[in-house]
Each structure stands twice: as C-alpha cells, then as structure tokens.
Length: 381
Image (cartoon, rainbow, N blue to C red; front, side):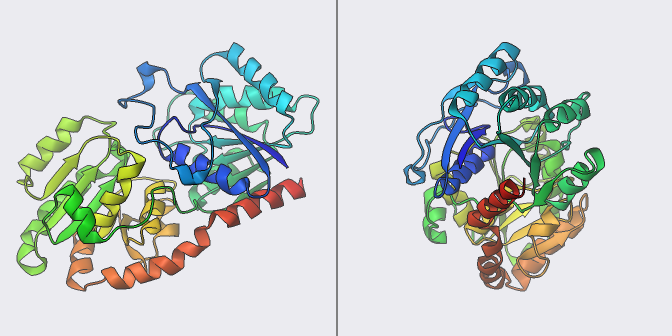
C-alpha cells in the first residue's frame, strides 16, 4: 500500500516528530511510505519555544530521509498546492497525526481535496480530540477536519471518550501510544550521572515542556515535604528538564522560596535527541505530576529505558502506569500524596522490582502492533 503521512517530521523537533519518524520507519517494512511536513508549522507569534527545528539531528538508524517541507499551516492557497502534490503521488492511505485544532482547517482542506474523485482513504491518529487548554474554535476546527476521515486511531480512554462524544458513529480503534525507541541505547546509571555532573545517590526526573497543566508547581511542593524526610530516605535530587512554555522565573522563585536550591536542578531548554538518554538513565524514576492529561509520550520514553513512573491518576496515565507494578499513581493536586509515593519508592527499595515489570509491560506497546491495527482498519474499509 502507498501511504503518505502529513504532520510534524524531522527537521522539525519534538515528540510528535519522533512519533512520526518511528511510525514511518515501521510502516515502511511492508508499505511504501512518504512523509510531508511543514515549512511553517506555527506562526512565530503563537510559538512559545525558542526554535521549531531539531538541534541534534535524526538518528541515522531510522533509515528515513528528511521529509520535504511543503505545508504552510496558515495559507489556504498552500493547502491546495499540497493536496495536488499528494494526489500526484496516488496514496491508498493518507495519515494525519492530530494534536491541536489549530491544524483542523489545514488538514481538513488537504484531506477533502485529496479524496475528491480518488480512492484515497484518510486516517487521523489522535493525541487529542479537544486539547487540555481549550480555545475558542477548537470544536469547530476539529469537526471540519474529522468530517474528511474514514477512520481514527485513539490512544487513550480519555481521547476515545471525546471522539465518541463529538463524533458518535466514528469508525476507530484504540491503541496505546507505542514506546519511543528513538533515543539510542540505555546507559549505565553511573555513566549518565557522570556525564551530567550528578553526585546525588537518589535522582528523580520530570521531563518535557513545562506548561501549567503539567503540575510542576505541585511537584516542587512535594519536594519540600521530601526534604523533611531526608533523614529517613536520604537526599533526593529533582531534575526538571525541558523548555518552559510558561513563566520560567515563577518556578525558580518558588523553588527558592521553598529552600530547594540544592534539591532541584533546572535544565530549561529543549533536549536534543542524542542527549535524552543521559537524563532518563541518570534517574531512578520519572515523575509525571500532571493536573490533566490524555496521555503522555514521556511515560513511553521512560518505559523505553525501563524506568519506573510515579504519576498522577489522570487521563491515559492510569492506563500506562500500573499502580504498585510499574510505578505509583496518586491523586492530582496533592503534593503530600506525591511526596509519599516518592518516599515509598525509596524506603521500600522498589526500583529493581518496578523496572523488571516495565520490561514486561512495555511489550504491549510495540510499533508492530500499531502497524497491524492500521492495516486492519484499512482492510475493513
């Protein structure tokens, strides 16, 4: 089958670009796959980050050439030209990775024009239907895009519920977010800590873009409580690693106000592909203190490196993190409960047990299983 993927892809950066690279790589084992990405993904006015391009390059083992940068997200005339280009390639399947309604008009128009008078089918793989931080027009933009879809893949119960609510009767399959395997081989913990200049014996990691819904403020409150238990469990270092899409200084001020200067290290930047493994391999566990979520690709990076996850019981996180098996789940907005979970992790020495269970649990998140799900949908339609 000829497949075209339209979404973020290298040389653009971020988890969705990584996802699409892996998806294309695994689909390419049995199909002819081409990826088309953006020449303008976000207007600079709307993009809170420092750069939209990857610093570290794409891992060469994926065997995928950089995607042509054709799509302008805000230019309707461009959407017509891109649709013509895709029609020229005659795909049997056109895949869109969907995460923001902002892209609804662009994706919906391209899909509608590609489908006109052809046998091309359209699949939306949905990170979200309606995002955490809602804006006016979200529902209308999403409906416009989804009217062109023949089928969907949703990756959590929360997204499934949204799809059923807004698009009853939609043809879909649910398949969880596969494990990210794009960041190279695991490293010895001592090696990773030496690279990062970490001397602490106990390290937890909070990784990814910092936004209000990620709950990092709650985690800082939890760290204050953990310092009160230092005589019992030892000193814990928290790594907060990722670019800030919120006011960075208010987090630093809060850490200072809580006297956490030596207990928290901020790495306030986007981490290139070739450095991601250092942070995950240096950590004993990954902490996801989200206030709301559909799913999190960070949990799948943690699982790739066999790391336990301590997370809040929100959205799809509870579907990935098995309480008392691969980590702990706690209620959101409760720093004491989050601190107690970290305390138990160290006091009960659960790292080895949880890591062994992660190695087993992550088998269900294989990319081959997602490829089979896509093939089954295509055959059914």
